Length: 275
Image (cartoon, rainbow, N blue to C red; front, side, top):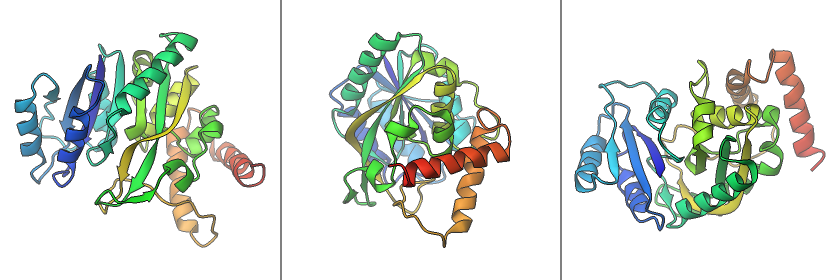
């Protein structure tokens, strides 16, 4: 059984399309767990209607009326997945291609045959970057954002600097759920922590080089996709990203800020001078 977990917050404009795309998956051995993080628009009404119409597939987790932020919200959802064979993360505003679950599951089972079911594993796919109306901006998020899974997926220090396994594109196995919980306090984003913890726990991250979903960009994205540009005039933005990376990676892989700077320099050289 696959548990799909989704945290929602003021997503009324887009969540219906995402729910429809999940219900339309060719792989149907799944249950969708949704936790709303205190929406003030019509999100809960939409979720409730879908859950009442498909109680066999959709379950809403009681949020206790709390707004805890996206990181803690996904941690609470993962805590509900102790019996799941696999967990697929989902964002409220994307749209999945019909074969997303089946292809990720197929690749996951291949990985488990190779590494064993007790090895923490992540399978993640590429994404089509779109605007708010799902008009394509770029056919590959990896190319658009200069993401290199062949570099990042095998080095915990690099991964802590630049996360390759986007949460909305990631499936994890049962062993990975146990490995990543509980989240460490101070983690900036849940998907960055999940990828990092899987690697340092002796697990593996496997890239599926196919865009299996539409990654919608709009004004309310928590992070979103940004086209990669090597510039020296955006130092403030680079400093913010560096602080976020250090917060996630310290002390798991970075002993101190000097150690972080060392690995960040190595990653810069690997990305720009050796590729």
